[in-house]
Structures are given as C-alpha cells and as structure tokens.
Image 1 (cartoon, rainbow, N blue to C red):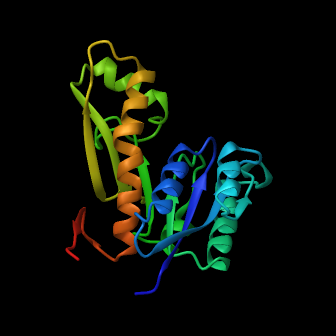
Image 2 (spheres, rainbow, N blue to C red):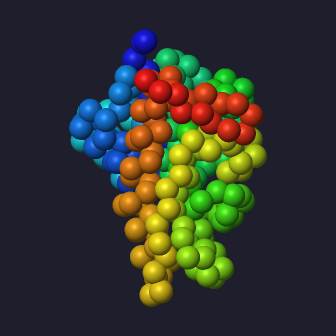
Length: 211
C-alpha cells in the first residue's frame, strides 16, 4: 500500500491543522503524510504552523481569482502537480466548485462543529453553529467528519463524537469544548483511516473496514 500524500486546505489560524500535525508527530496518521498546506489567503497563522513543522505552504489567494470556479481550477492543478491523494478542509472558508469533486470524489474530508444533519448547511460555520445549538436548547452537540460533496455539509458521514452541552455554556465555551474533545481527535482519526484504505462509501453510509 503506497503512502498517501495529504494536502490540508486552510483559511485562518489552523487549529485543526495543528491537531493533524501533532497527530502525525505521534505516529497516529498511519500510511499518510501531510505534504502540503494550501491557504486561500496570504499571511494566515496556519501557514506559520506549516512552516514550523517543515511542511511546504502554498497560497492561492481567493482575491486573485475572478470567480470560485477559477480558483477551484487552479487548486485542482496545484493538487495534481503535488500528486495529492486526499484533501482535508481544515477551516477552509472558500467556496469550491464541481471541478474539485470530480477529481477527488470521496477523497475530500471536512470537519463540521455539530452533529450533522443538525446545524449544518449554508451559513452554519464558526460561532454561528454553536449559537444555533444553544438557541435550540440541545443537550448534546459535537463534531462530524464527512466526505465533501457539492451539497454543503451533506456528504457521507465518516465519524461523529458528542459532548454534553452545559447549562452555563456560551457559544465560545461550547466551541472550545467541541474543538478539544471532538474535532482535534476525530479529524486525524478519519484521515488515518482513509490513508489505510479502511473507508468504504456505500451510498450515504461510510463503512469502516477492519485491518
């Protein structure tokens, strides 16, 4: 089984990127290696994290492209040039178009800070997700790792993990708990499973194969 090359797409601080880098350092991403970090904006902290870890960083500045499609085409060209096997969206806040999904079908992984299908879809990102969860009075929330498709937050679910919502939670405290207890654990786990060829997509279901 050839070692898989991972590209992480970022737009900001890169906390989920750091979780992946740390997991890789601990040997937890089996049969895979982060070989590129690609940012949709220049001078974001995620690129510093990549540089500190010795991972090549690239910028495809969304503002330099006339449309989402033009940027997506450039992104696909870069991924192909780097021989990338799996694409991980880690706080990537840029819309991509079908060109990416056609080339990387069931090979684009995203983390969402809620239990999909709750609090998902257009407009549900960052603190907005946790504000909606608290407004609904849910008793648990969490994170979902899923394959990315053209429909926002609607791809096949790989892994989910829940945490309790506490009576005095604010969007900020809930966000932090979900990041620490769910996102930073689930994302490296899902990427490792992909790199080991242990994820099998059957319709909307993702089966995790035994070793």
